[in-house]
Image 1 (spheres, helix red, strand yellow):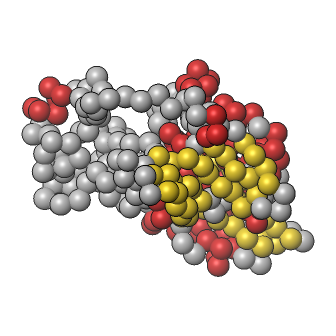
Image 2 (cartoon, rainbow, N blue to C red):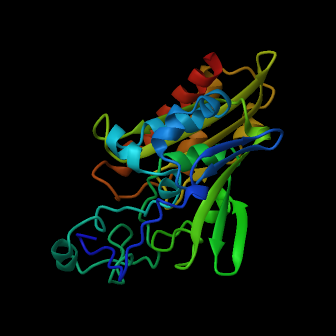
Length: 287
């Protein structure tokens, strides 16, 4: 708001809505997490750490402890997309002729394009995608529930399916996604506080030493967090090794579409997706 990226007429504090806070396991169904549950509560939850460890790992990397005490899972899911040209003062943006995302019709990331490429930079959504999460949205006509992967549009300036008069209220993790080994790896300029410039979430389940299921999701390298297609088929029934992890890393790098939305080059961020994917898979397989 200080940079006039948001200019609301009113600001409403929703923190006192008790029904939207808390982690509530449901036997045989999974777990319900209120949208106002703090990231610190998720990070420290014994239940989530035991059954959905990739989520607690991702939550632990967000910003700093002070901010995790205030920031919520709902806020992280709804985090605004970011760009080197968008996250600036009004004076700076005016001098550049604004951009598609705010006040203009030009994309500085992809000149000549009609699509906004501002990147999504939330840490918990890729973990939630790996866990087949669903979200509940409330509005004047009632509530609706949809898979998290359908919540994002992949368009930087209109990145989520949430109307101005709607509120994200709950997150659901199914019992079928419980007890996967989970790893989250994040590239950032500093070791804390900073948003991810490339992030990888991995969940893995094995039987008799062989991979029986695996999922991989990326953040900060596309206008939306994305699941990498083909990972399960590539790994299913095989024993994880360096060669296999490298192959999945190449697949993830091809899925990543980083453009010049941050200070680091797209080439470096894509390469780190490959590296982090390989490391995360080998770490998950060794746990």
